[in-house]
Amino acid sequence: MVNQRPRILPETEPVDDAQGKNSSLERMLSLLDQFVESSPVWSADELADALGFTRSAVYRYIRELSASGLLAPVATGRYSLGPRIIQLNRQLQESDPMLVAMQTLEADLPRFAAAQKWHLCRLFRDRVVAIGEYGHLDKDLSYRRGCPMPLLRGATSTAVLAWLPDRQLMRLYLENQDEARTPTLGASWPEYRKALAGIRKQGYALALAEVDEGVFALAAPVFAADGKVTGSISVVRSLDDYSAQRVQQEGTMLADIGRRISETIRQMAVAQHKPATTKTSRKRQKETR
Image (tube, rainbow, N blue to C red):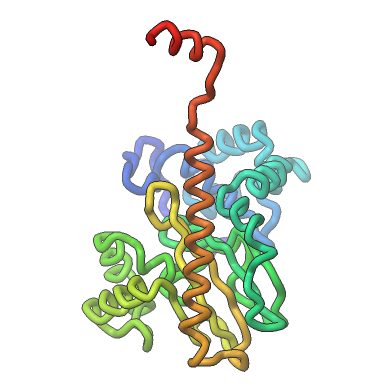
């Protein structure tokens, strides 16, 4: 299944605290990443060969993942993703602050065109992942729910990228210079930084056929309760609907939607941690008066 076998990582390899790439939990969860449409069923030996882990470690990981319902046996010694993932997906739909916020706004989303696709995306490491899709568009798009996408191309990603701290932004640029060079963002770090500063100033990002041919996208950032960028909201339409005269007005509307989602997230975070008033606490308040 894999032609070249990666090096086997020793069980005692130190943990990278910044990225967590070699932690035991991270290594165990990396097994789940292998279960995709083209390879839905794996054995322990196949996973060990693909990931370069020791067989003893993979067998232990499979036991733990199976016990938690994240893996399920489909034949002797062969496994697929388990039912716990469906349960977690349901919990995510009902409790994720970004999705809950979007539910309150979905009916009020502006109808820019008869065919338009909205994406709600969350930042995940150095990528963005679509967690919600709304509307329809008669075109196949790269951005689909659950599919990680690069952080350096497209309005959906750029709307997150432009609000990242400079240190993280420079690291991403230096590690991905060829991918980062685009006609809209420039061919050097000073040009790139200046273009992203312009996006921050206007409050939204625009991309014309940058990820998928025949479409354009407008996107705005979404912020967590602590003020850090956590994702983006974007709308994708056919290039036939693009109007340079309307783009600023539409972009401003996207930025407002992003702010409304961010505010709902902030309110949910405050409500979640607001201490409840109990009989005991009320009694203590009276005693201290």
